[in-house]
Image 1 (tube, rainbow, N blue to C red):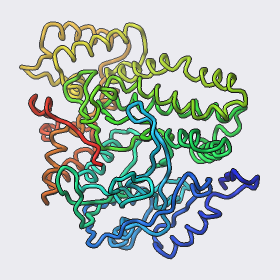
Image 2 (image 1 turned 60 degrees about the horizontal axis):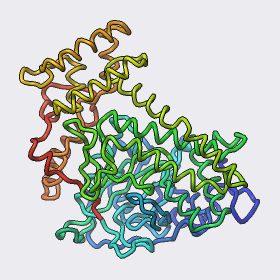
Image 3 (image 1 turned 90 degrees about the vertical axis):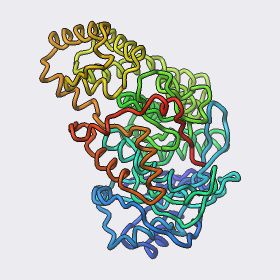
Length: 505
């Protein structure tokens, strides 16, 4: 049994007792196909507020993720029970947190989301089920707490694509129209999405505990998070230090994985960095087409803080904020705590660089790391930027020998690099093995921004054909098929220069 020590008592509490136990009993009366737990509510009450979701008059299911329901062994009798899930229940809570947004600190919280509870699978895996777009909470700060159909369909589509791209991510169980109109630039159809994650605890949750709670509150949150997400560090001499190292490692791996597929998160604020190492918040995200390290699409990222190539720097900055939050419990002496935290960053850049180049070399079919290999990667990226080569299609072409006659890849400088790359493969492995590695690491299909926008526009107007096609194609993103070549086509340069993404709030 998992246990958590309550901050106000030395008594070990099973996850789900106290207020959590009461909520669990209320839930059983509400929904018999989904037995939810409420371990988060064993934390001090300042970390959450009980919430009753907005009552929607004419809800209508749009998408149900039957494959995910099957994976989780969730078996509703019919889709009406899923609709009931999307309407929420009285046993719901919103999480409090803070965060650095574009470098500035502020007090936040779930302003348009509520946690319905924690689902335990037959294998005892724990997942938050969160309802997004469910209306105002105490943390809405003047917002309406609602979401548009377009934004929730985007969340569903991109998170499913990310999952099949083999990147840790939140996933969507279902989307429903609410029957309400939501005012953004114009009146739009309202919607809610039910999404799952290992946990919605974020760096901002720890910043909140440090700035607005006691040391005991911070220790309670840390104990709970370790036991829930990283129980393997419990036996370490300093579990908090080991926990910090685990989270840093998970975040480095995640960002390197984003770089592998050309993903740009767009809003890497500390409140959008999950301690579990999962990707979430798919508002202003996008995928890079023509390679350039400074590529950014987010309408609110005016200075390129979260540009594609700056994501490694930002995750280091975010992890430094996380470390600062943990200082009071890293060591009783502040100077010693700072020294311990610094040990986690002494080799940060080196570790990140090693993982980045290892990833990039695998994209080139090369397993062995070397200085020559790193130079080969740098030369390729320089060529791709100068020749405005499509990031995904360049590696797809190398993987499959599909060189097109008019491609810039036929330019003399690229051909020179190509010969150098072939020699590197010959000296380290076989072309057969290299192509296998490349196929495993280079997707043929990514959510192309122009196709995503076209699909969303059609869907909000009642035509779901293209979004359904994209969902099917992205279930096997590493399996190139010539008859699906349309989905590998980059957008026009005009679209690319004008395209912007938005938060949706």
